[in-house]
Length: 473
Ligand SMILES: [Zn+2]
Image (cartoon, rainbow, N blue to C red; front, top):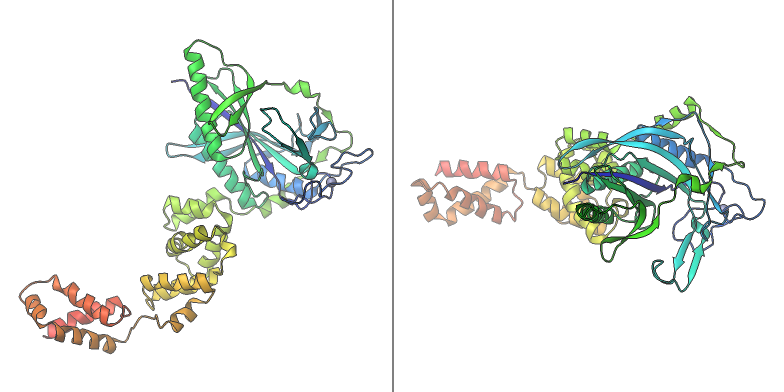
């Protein structure tokens, strides 16, 4: 079996308020060509102005990926013609990017490996073409929406350190968790906020590039297909051609696009309308100090708190869930119990309503109140499930629901003793059998007395009293 060498180039749209070089909004889903100005339409005389927020978002990503930030970097023009590129060039970074030499720790079931990051650089997005038919067939109509023209992009280039489709998928999952935790991108592949190109070769031979894959599942499928295709070629003694390929989602295969162009074909030259970017250590420090706890660190913390690795990952990789968890934890310091409820009852509701945790009528303080009631034994965890369902449906507090529905546990020993005595009085035969050694009947008495209490007797107290009453007989 030949070993695959895989590198990923990921394009990330930043969720800044405005575009990379003008003040137009980057909001997704606005009407076509409604977010445009002379700069992003490349009208004569319009000049770019660098977006400071975009630069700081870029720093944050580079720092999270352990890259070295370069004190001096430059923007270049990458020249080519395409109808979605009104200037005839894209402003990008070339041989002097703002960051280099980082890494990302990537975990799969088999391994925990360090994948190198060659560079992170800044550039601008192109406009968006919409074709009446697939571009690979003959298009009948083509429309262009310039809203996306000039949206800030980061390109994150991995070293060819990835060795399987599974590891590529884990790399993307970890990267997206970091981007979301930093709050600098939605990381939403369906909306095009994250786009992925993959390079793959076998036994370090000739590589093929597959462009613009738009889901994690497709990245994995494309790689699996490509490994098989290249293996078959080499088995037959045929060469792998260096080329760009496209992944066909419908059939799960890759098809040949064009032979790969080289960097020199783009005639890169320094962008004369932007001064070089000088980055002071103070500026980097300011951004570094604002970095939040990153997913890997967060997973470790939750794991140490007693959560299973899968639970820790589910919470830590979703920033809004992690925030909710931490706020609950600040008032109810029992992480494992919070995770149990968040990942069962609450997640069920999120899935059923297809919404995020910020959109349901449950706040961390509310969940903490409920868990406190269960923790203290005021209600059983079974009743807790009824209560949380009501809280999620109505937005009422745990206390209100317990009070209104009279769901609190009965903790009064004499009330419970009454139920136990009635139970024993009504079951003389079973009592006799128990005395003769049929110990299993103990559970029967507890069950019957619990029924009398309407399920509300505190279980520990009930057990103790049943024992006491049986011993009296
Ligand atoms: Zn604009």
